[in-house]
Structure formats: structure tokens, C-alpha cells
Length: 262
Image 1 (cartoon, rainbow, N blue to C red):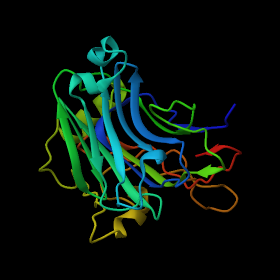
Image 2 (cartoon, rainbow, N blue to C red):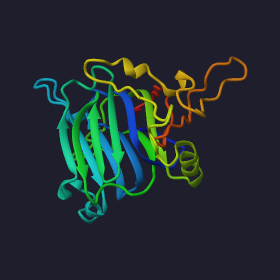
Image 3 (cartoon, rainbow, N blue to C red):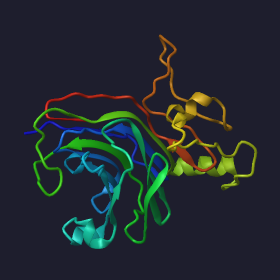
Image 4 (cartoon, rainbow, N blue to C red):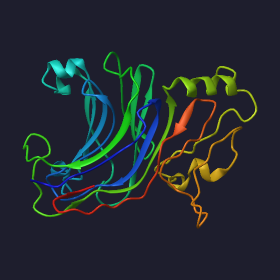
């Protein structure tokens, strides 16, 4: 048995939005690090990093971008057979430093980014139609065709944060949005909050958190505060904008276990 690690969002109402994770991958061969949006096995948006495929000698660092769909299920959950699979090559070593990985999920389309640079876009019937939740995993099952391994030593995936700005599928949130934004009028005062993006030339947005900014919009909900210290509890946060987007959670974690660590 090989120990693994997983972190899930507690909310299951994540619909269209942008989802971002700051991560430093493991350089130990034999693990799969995954950042993904999930409803079920046929509605899933994946970014998966296989450490066995990282090759420093030739500067090759692939990331597998996948939409699991009904077509993929019919092909034995092999999305390669459906055209909704892209192996993109990163212009940096993902195990050498932190980088932001991002999924933008909008009606009928999904886009994947690394440090704000577009890696691939997908569309069509494979794009999910339900709400779901976010998952981070680091695992190995010894399968030579995917994760490889198990790793010969402890492998560490370090997560700096996860940020999500999204439409909620719950009826009350939808009504809140209509009441506040007049059905989506982005021209009204303080209707839209600008969310800065990480780019290769500017990584300062890594330290930017919506709720640190106070009342950027009307009726902004900020995180709870610790009653003793007054410090923010940066675990689960709701911040509303007229785009109907919510922040899910952000955290700083380094969980160490024997075998695979996430």
C-alpha cells in the first residue's frame, strides 16, 4: 500500500468559473499530481502531472489536460480516444518552483493555463453541464501506463493556495445575484471586481486575495475572524460579485506522509 493525499472543497455547487492552484510538483518519479473539477466520472475536468514523464535532460515537462465524458467512459475512460485529451508541454520545470495552474470553465468551453499562459481549449459535448467541486490529489498505484511507481522515496506535492471564483448552482445564490446585479448588468457601480491574473512577467497576483480588499463590491462577504486573535480564518470564504462568482477556499498546506505526499 502507498499513502496518498487528497483535499476536496466542501461545497458541491461550483458551476462556471475560474479555478486556480499554486503548486510545486514532486521530482520523484512514480506519482500523479492532479488538480481537477469533478461532478462524476463522465463530467470531469483534469490537469494531471505524471512525475515519471518529467525529463530534465531535454527540458520536457508535460501536463495532461483531460475532459472525462460519456464518450471517454465508452472508450474505457480513455479520453485520448475522444479528442478531449491534450498533452501540453510546460516551458519550465514544475518541480523546481511554484507555478499557478488554472482551469476556466464557461458554457460549452474549458480553457487550461499555466502562469496565465493558455495551454489548450476544449469544447463540445464533453464539457460538463452540472455543478461540482474541486479536488487536489497526489497518488500512485504502480500502473506503468499512468502514475508509474510506486515512488522509491517520499514524494512531496506542495500547495500554496487554491482560489475559485465561480457561479453557484444553488437557488438562493442565483436570486441574490439577480437582486444585486439586476440580472447581470455589469455597468452598474461596483458591479464587477477585477481579479488580477498571474503571468510569466508578473507573479505578484499570487499574493492577491479577494477578501483582503474589503468592500470592493456592494454586500461583499468576507471571511470569518478568529474570536481570540482577530486573525482571518483563511479556510472557506464567500465573496460575491455581479458576475455571480464566488471564492471557494484558499490555504497553505504541506502534508507529509510516507510514500506519496500532497
